[in-house]
Image 1 (tube, rainbow, N blue to C red):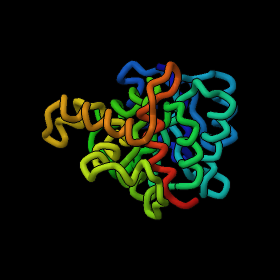
Image 2 (image 1 turned 30 degrees about the horizontal axis):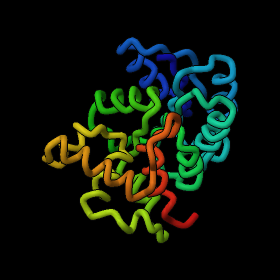
Image 3 (image 1 turned 180 degrees about the horizontal axis):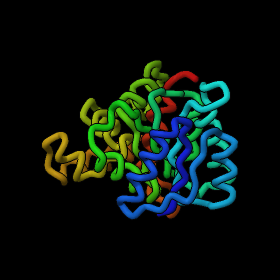
Image 4 (image 1 turned 120 degrees about the vertical axis):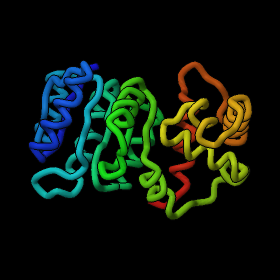
Length: 217
């Protein structure tokens, strides 16, 4: 796995780089602002970019805007936003294409190095990894969606865990359910959201997007 790290705090940037290198993950470039990030991705075409949301010069949303531009120009480059802040508008835009390869973790809520590395692996492989607080903020003003209205409370709970990037076995372990039971719930979610199997669509991602789109911009 080849990574680019975009973080304006040099200590944190160097710390992430050292952590990844210690786990045999190549860091091909680092960046301190959005412009440097986009240039680094264009030059190195990494598998994944680890991006802080707020970077110079305004420390508002430079990182996540750069991430949106990267996904548009280089859709094979996954993006893991790693920040203290939730920026909902651009996060929603990142998730909306349904292609996967998107993560959004909050720095203060990572409890172990392995949790971060597992999320990095999932996102680089085309999956998703969303912190529950990110999901909560994206879902604070829900809109009506007939498909979502048909979901049972248990199915909604499972869909939220799918949004975090958890596999069916991980969901079964978390909820203390049989693996087969989780598979049936997930299949029911797809059916109620009219997400038929296709050769290209990532149904887990599309189901999450329906969930996240059920709120006002």
